[in-house]
Image: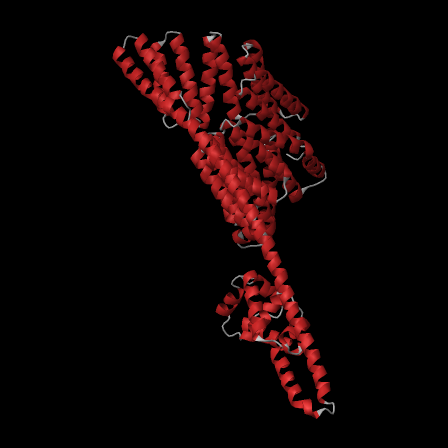
Amino acid sequence: MDETHIRELEAKLADTRGLERIEILNALAGSLRHDDLTRAHAFANEAFQLAQTGATRRMRELRALTTESGNQEERDDPAVRLYHKCRAFSLGHIGYCLGQQGKVKESNEALQQALKDFQMLGIKEGKALILYLQGCSDETRGAYESALANLSAARDLFRKTGGRAEEADALLMMGAVYLHQNHYHAALEAMNQSLELSRQGEDPNRQAHILTSLGVVYMDLNDYEKALEFFLQCQAMSARIHDKNLEATNLNNLGSLHYDLHDFGKAQAYYEQSYALRLSLHDIRGQAISLNGIGICLSRSQKYQEALDKFTDSLALLEQAPAIAVQTIVLNNIGDIHSRRQHYKEARTIFKLSLEISRQVGDRQQIAQSLYRIGKICLDQQAEAEARLHFQEALVVSEGVNIRGLALDIRMGLARACQNSGDMAEAGHHYEAALVLKDKLAGTEADDRLNKLRILHEVAQTQQEREILRLRNKQLEQDMELQRRDLTANALHISQKNDLLRRISRDLSKVLRAPAIEFESRIRDMQREINSSIGSEDAWTSFEEQFKNVHLDFLETLTSRYPKLTATERRVCALVKLNLSNKEISRMMNVAPRSIEVYRNRIRKKLALPPESKLSAFLLSLR
């Protein structure tokens, strides 16, 4: 979020009305939606209401002016179309905000309506944005396949419409989804493509966001050194561009890195720095995330009451700025502390609340986790029958869910519940299934470690190959430039040689007018020889070979597309492509400058160029 840009937009908002106000409100909603959901939602709602009112008023005006039905006229009216366009953008932002708050049905309705509006208006950029926002909402609730489909479609549309920055955003989000699925290669590929687009667009803010995301991928690959390198790059860049929101996010990621390394003191220090920044920015959701980080560090240090206080404060903030994904995590952290302290009633209440929220958004990962936690509490309280019900439901829900070890924990819970209730046959069945899962998990973990090492090796190798290719391309560019220079030098050499030969020819002409008649025959022979060397085929053959090395397939393409061109006309085309003047071309070809004008006119006719088109521009663009 560019704070200066936000302030400028808010300053403009105070003095604007009508369509301009709606557009500024939408711009504010778009700029704030990732960092300040509450304000983004408020701006989008106001924009929607104003656009709806404006469109209705304009349609009434049109109906008052015509006795006909006027439906088509209303749809085609520029003002009505603008209002509808603004309304569709507002709906997109509203849908995104609702999705982040866990209101899946309302979110989908808003996004689908926005998509229909943009399709009706024929605005591809708008359609691309809605697909992107839908993908983001899908990612929040764990619907990864749907998220990838929408983000990929958005990316293709952004590319077609020239939205380089938006394409970079879609690729970054695709990378995040791939990471959720442990598809590390795909995640790194998408994020690196996003980074390249941002570098091409000279967008340091977006680059910094991608750097911290790459750090998260490497942290998941257990390459903490590489992850730290990216986080530090992001920290330096975010400080340089004065993006405190990004700086706070990156500090959180640094906290997570040190938490993974079991350096809980240092991790907590980073989370606290992030919280202080979020506090100064009045970023409520960001404060909640940082407080959750501080809480998990305190919990690992067995400072349970302090941790519980931080989690409770985080939850209170999330009531002001809802973020469903964060809320369920914080609730589960609170429930875990109550469980450790054997406050089973409180723990169960918290886990049930988490389960209810997860069911609302359809997040199967969190549903399975909450069901398992409730079943475990029932087991600890010797309520075996109820525990079995929760474990069995968790087992069904967890099928196909990517949570390592959860199925094993559920099976062990079921085995214990069956054993405690005297159902030894069923307990044995679950123990056997648990042993199979344990062996499989051990093998999977070993495979995982090897796979991560393999991925890191392949990524490093790919980067090395790309660097070699970059250097090779750079060398080829330098070689090509040298050949261009040689070609131009050769062209000038031919021109200068012809000038020289003309001078010699003129001198010999003077000699011919002298009284030394006995030399006449010999001098005439010399003159013929010199004249024949002017514009000689050998020189042209050499020139054409060099020309072909620099401008690959140009002459062949010219010949195949325009077979009516003569050999001389093709030579003129080659020299025009070198950006030589008519005078220079005439010298090379040993003809008068006026002849070159005639040639150019003939060429234009054979190429069927319109009067306003330049021959040189056409030939330069010909591939």
